[in-house]
Length: 102
Image (cartoon, rainbow, N blue to C red; front, side, top):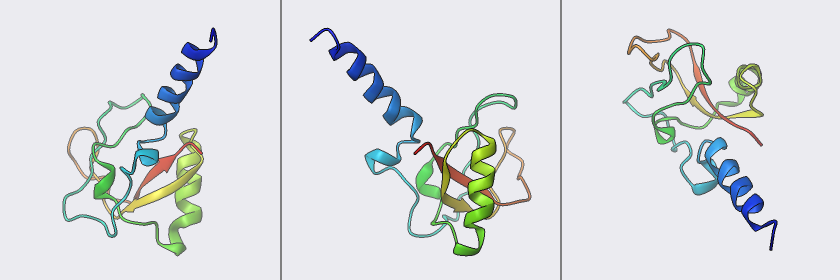
C-alpha cells in the first residue's frame, strides 16, 4: 500500500503527457476546417489546444511526422494538420503533427 501514491502519480502523469490520446481525445477522421494552435510560448514544450482538430497522418508524411515528434522528445506522430497556428496566432506555413509519448 505504500506504493499506491507512486502508482497514482505515475498513471496521472502518463495520461497527461500522452496528449490525452489514451482517453480517446485524439485526432479526428480528417483535419478540421479550424486550425489547431500551439498553447505554449516558444522555448517551452509544445502543446496543441485541441487534438480533435487533427486528422490521421497520411502515409507519405508518417516518417516526417515521426521525425518532427522525436525532435520534441516524443515517440511518433498520431495526427496531422496541413497548416496549424503558432502561439501568436500566425500560421506555421508547414505541416503540423500531433505526437504521442508511447
